[in-house]
Length: 77
Image (cartoon, rainbow, N blue to C red; front, side):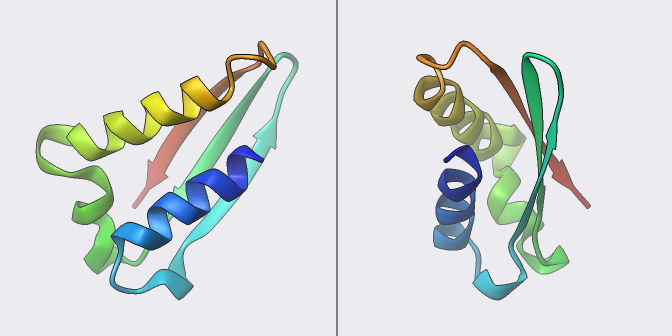
């Protein structure tokens, strides 16, 4: 579910939605979502001073409260 949420948000922000890729790395009690976008769209996903990225992480944490699993979002170059 978290993977689809991140894909939807990222595709809404970028100019090239076909380049959005989310990889999930599951761990024990936690997971890491790796978001990759087109290099020209990287600034749109990160935002000024990282504000957009922080907002996406906040939404991800709020959506994941019930599961009790920690999920981290990494935005890859």
